[in-house]
Length: 263
Image (cartoon, rainbow, N blue to C red; front, side, top):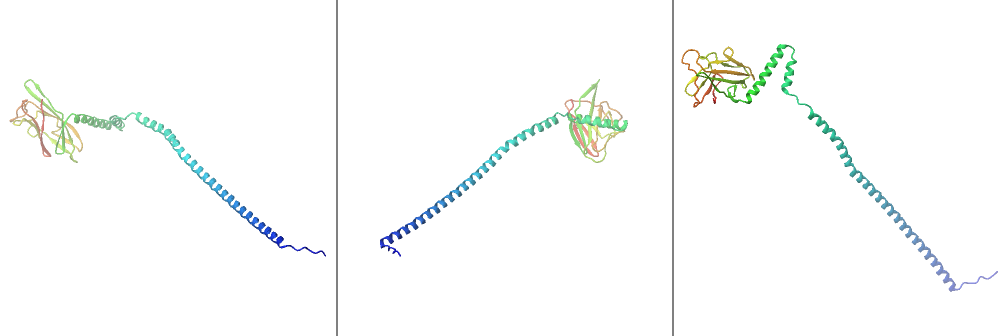
């Protein structure tokens, strides 16, 4: 049996130092590996975060670009619609306007009987005439009746002065029929005066001594002054340019004087 040589104290210390050194180195290696691993992991996280931010930024930019690009598309659509609207407006403007009077005449012709057509056309003509009459006249409202007076001139027939007065009378203020009376020089609710002398009519167009106006109805009224007719204190009409003459209304429904402004 061989004898194993005994280690000296120096050799033992050397082995212990070597073992400790090995342990320290191993621990350092592990620590460094761990650090590097953590660093690598952090880098990966950073890269993922950066990538995510980039994707989010790109997505926002894409949406922004789409949003910015959309208005021109709407403008194009609007521009496409506008010509159509303008075309429709132009078409409406080019349509000929319908004359209301012509439309009313056509309506009269469509009446069933000739009598109805005649009455319709007669009323339409009266309306047209009264419209023209009103435009060139002064208006005087007496009670429920409106008098339209266009003015008058005195004419000469030999040595006799003749005054023809024409009025348009219209029932504008009553829901009932209104009657205008003048049955004769003695019983007539209309005459003229120069402030001193009153003159009775010489002729008129009152049918049976009266004019009856239904609500809203209008009619021409003609009355002439000149030579005296009848008996009594009637005097012939004599025109004096220096005097002012009035047409006097003396009806139960209204009394007034209309200035004639004769020429």
